[in-house]
Length: 142
Image (cartoon, rainbow, N blue to C red; front, side, top):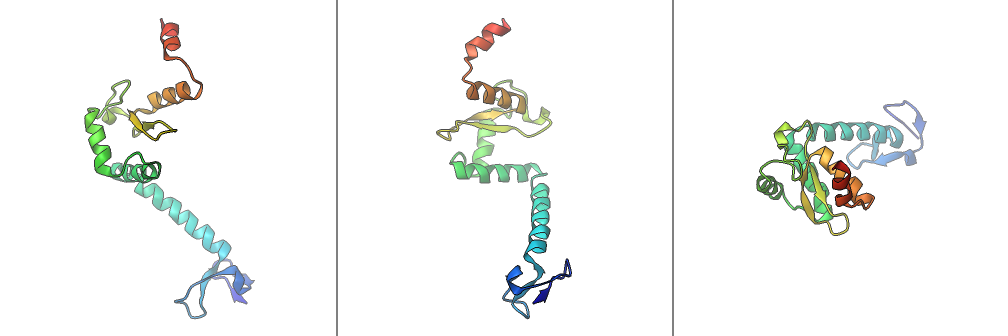
């Protein structure tokens, strides 16, 4: 039996993660306290990393590597330059946006179509999801 340093509860060793470097071979915190503590700090670190433009791009690249869209930060920056640092649809500049841009891609093929502002990305999502004919929108708007 071992006492958790955080919750001060005496628990069996099976309720503690193994830690080869410690005196008894187990962590000081029980699994429940350990998980709660490190999940919270992991979330806080993610927020800090994503609070800078570089951090947001790195997070985006990591997510898109999985889908096979982009493979590096340089590739995204080249894509930004090819669009003149603006939304593909409304042409609003990335600097003028309150939040960062969205990477619009085909969900079946993974092919990147362009970089969009949040409003245009939402519009494209609705058009794509509900199979709306863009000509019908144009006709409606007159």
